[in-house]
Image 1 (cartoon, helix red, strand yellow):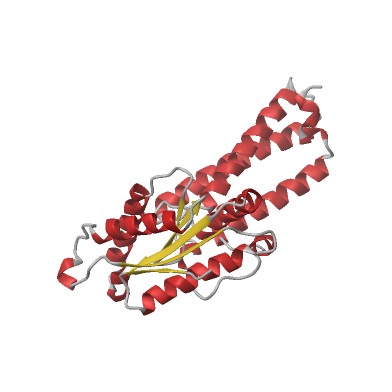
Image 2: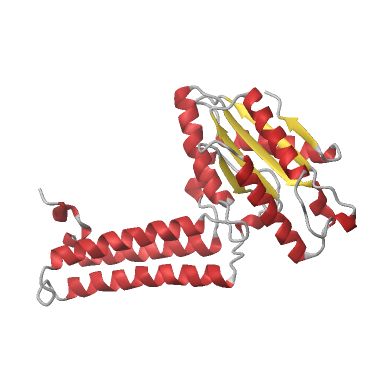
Length: 281
């Protein structure tokens, strides 16, 4: 059977229009507002403990906005082509089935571009928290199935507390992100900007020993960063790190795993910084 028979272009045009409208609404909500939807929260099992949600705000620069508008324009152009083909009833466009298939596939590519854009933190280029939690759900389910350990690291720079210069603050976060990416060695590990000043690292198939090696590597890399403008402030680039490693069971929720890592991070901060705290089992 031809692939064309399975393309939605052969459905009722009204149904397709409803699907397109729903899709555009969902994409704009996800890309601009960057809010967690109800189904996503259900998969995690609840809400996070109190931490800043700064990384989820739409902090788009001019280049980010231009890129997003370009992707959306391609999306709209492809949708318009599909609508014209439906309205003409296959009369004026020759091999309309082939054209519709091309337009449909191009539109699907645009959807993937927009989805990827909506899960990227504009300042650092890392995944944002929404993208991170999607990955966490995937790895949580895999670890549950394989009965393997999963590690989660949440950390923040101690010196950012006293930094009131927004430009210097942003440059620091960008440097941290770049250093973090070069420090994490395994392709299976996943890094993200977790909140305004915190970062997260997901470590699949990693027990306490492996998580210890990674966190010590992060602490060492951050401490030896060259930070322009921070020396005269008397700031040292130390970090507070919270870690949770666990082999999840089917009855457990990933949100509890997240909250344990957050508690460990808060404890590291309360100890005065420059420390690593593991969540108790």
